[in-house]
Length: 356
Image (cartoon, rainbow, N blue to C red; front, side, top):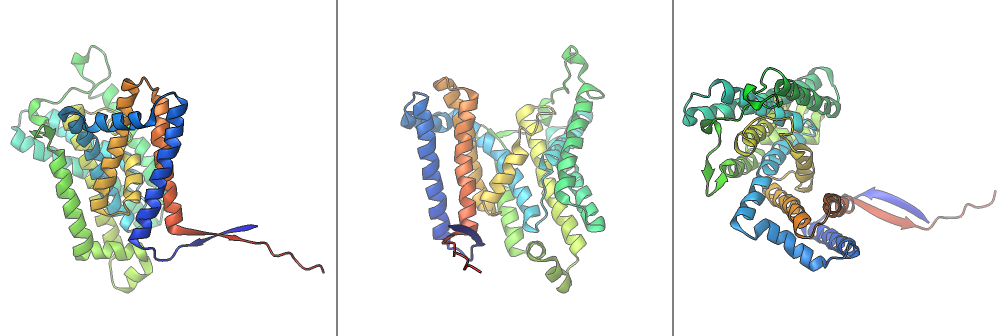
């Protein structure tokens, strides 16, 4: 028996939904067995996960707060991925966006909020954009591998924040503890309906990027470049200019995430600012097929998984590792379904060779 894998042709949206649905059903079955082995009723645990996300106004707000950075970051990643530029340096871009925004919060803290917050937003986007621009220029000029360069830059950004936290920006009032001073009230994003206004920024970005990619010349050029660099050149497009613009935009959006997390969630800059959002958002963007509206749906799904898993740890005294296994099984099945969407598996009988 031989197993052969071939590239799938065009597949209908209905079939994609069916394959993903089967993957979710399989994930539920597997996690149910795992939960049962731990001595809990799977249906009660699933109900508790939903309760942990939507059971009260506070829990609902926390779920939305968890989803906001995932949505914004995944939208930023999708811009770069559209032109097949594998921007894996999102964590660094978030950190550098947070750094630039923190610079404004610390050194211009006497400004009124109506001036300071927009300044922080602008600087945050500039910080993330510049950090993404570096690998874009290296690729455009020298043809470097963007995956490796952007990944390495994550660690440079992280060590820079550690240096600031333990050195120049260390808060003298922290009794020797290595932390950066908390932001003043005028540097903290205001709340709308009990949730920081990052959710409004996320909605605006989702709509804006959807329009940019699908209804503008710049978006069309990004997609053409993603399909074929030679085609883009043949059509007279300035490949270098498109690449730099797209990466400035991608990194700027990710830097905006850093500003929002530093201002509205942490109220300061720390080395843990990203909390793994950058890597999770890569999965989200891929699962959403790089489409902004679907990014919202997938991000909310991930936020429910995260908040729900956190809640059942307390409600059922389930160890953190067990809760993470439940998350991991669900993600493994959903991600695995992408293989069957993109490829076909053929089982063929091996033909016996004739004797010479």
